[in-house]
Image (cartoon, rainbow, N blue to C red; front, side):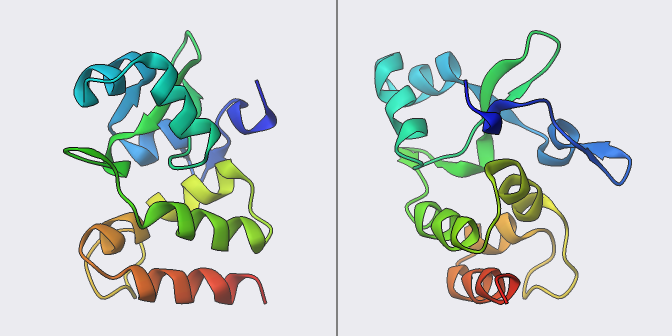
Length: 131
């Protein structure tokens, strides 16, 4: 696996696993979307969603908030690209997306703002991080 699958970093007393909350394993996603495991792995490889290794067994999992009923949220891939272009690795992107920010137009973290339809505002803030 890649460095992106390394153990979660400590984030102000809470690890990434706790910060994100609900995770879905590759088999969970395959079942939920009624697709083969290989298709879920392709979603991860194509960066439609980001994953991390979690739990004692260090299983590959994806934040549940990255999905709608029929698949990955389409606005995520571009957001991941903006953050990666700004120098963030996958772990830092996950931390940023799930860290609460009181200055957002909705209560919660950037992922919650994206889910509420504020993709443009989140991406604007992501671009500012690069400067």
